Length: 205
Image (tube, rainbow, N blue to C red; front, side, top):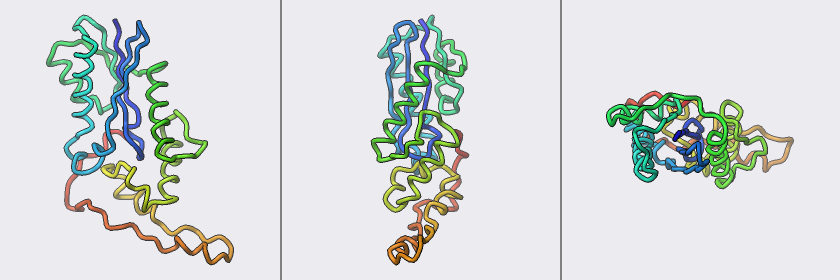
């Protein structure tokens, strides 16, 4: 039997992430959600997404009764670092793989569905992760940052150092409509992050 394990959403700035599992022979797919809180302080500094991923893999190996004779294809992402250590320690054989096909499509669709449920209504939001999806999500946050920052993975270093300030920048006025001044002077609320606190480099982006 071949078991594939993949992730999605770990590098997106908005929403939770997911770990997906697939038995290739049967086509069975199961999802495990990594909640947004694991990508925010204080859990982010504790590498909580990596630990949660390992825990989910351990759970699924029990649930699916995965034997050591089975072939494990594991996504190459850093979120699986502790998982790789655990597999080696427990005697499982795995290969780092570029997961494509049904599982990759399923986990990316899971992410899109979650983002839609949060209110991301941009038609340009697709299952294709990367730069384009980043800016779709950033623009969505920037349209109402005071209300939408709660959906952001605020543990990401780039959010705190660059994108948060940009999200709260004054919006351009439109014509002479006095109502267009409404959001001109919005400023980001004081972040709860301690600037002197060291945080790990974001390994997912």
